[in-house]
Image (cartoon, rainbow, N blue to C red; front, side, top):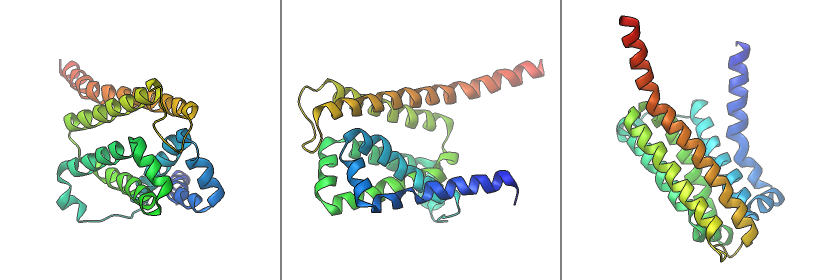
Length: 197
């Protein structure tokens, strides 16, 4: 096996195993006890684990039948993101083992499904999807930053403000990705036209 392929497989394997760290109660309580870590560390880790599992070969052939041109996967990720940006859902996930399990499964499935859907998305749909997620993330971050009262019973207001900075920064990154994707085909078309003349 070539070295770069081995390194890639090792990286995907590490990412796929990340959710197992949440089985350690002390670490899970530390992460979920802070709103910023809960949203900006645990959620991406679960999403990345699902994505990595898809890359390691854990695939379902039926996805192509129910995921027309990647739309179902993109819609699922949008719904998962909307759901877990709600402060009430963060609180419920700390108080109910069933909701906590739903959180883990939904984020993992979102990453797993989008890893397969991503390459089938049309550029326009991809732009809309990425831009929409960026807009929602920025809105949630600004809400956490600007609201004077605590939105989560289980998290302090200072931590709420810290948690608001992360989504805003993430929205900027996602917005840059969306703009890059929107301008890339135009750049390629212009380069092709120049090469022909």
